[in-house]
Figure 1 (cartoon, one colour):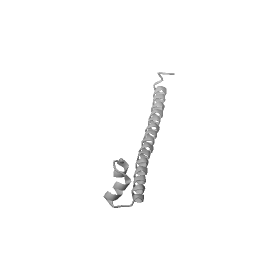
Figure 2 (cartoon, one colour):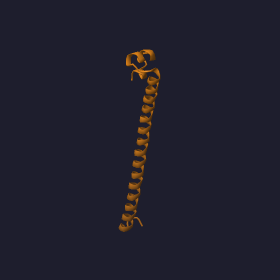
Figure 3 (cartoon, one colour):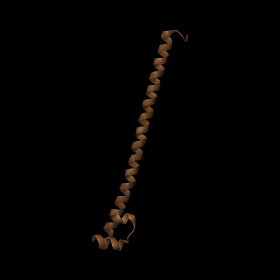
Figure 4 (cartoon, rainbow, N blue to C red):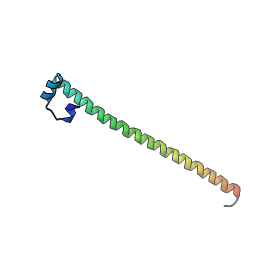
Length: 79
């Protein structure tokens, strides 16, 4: 997190945590990639849920249309 925040130089981070600069760079890249993937997955999931909802609503509309047409036919009111 400290590398991502950018409040300290890489040399300071290496000294503070006792790791090589390459390791800090790798961790920072992995963390940023994971954050990007997290948002990407949420977006895909949200889009999928929305598509499923739309499909369900169209199904309900179709069912209601069939029922209304059947009721109109049976009642003889709208010949």
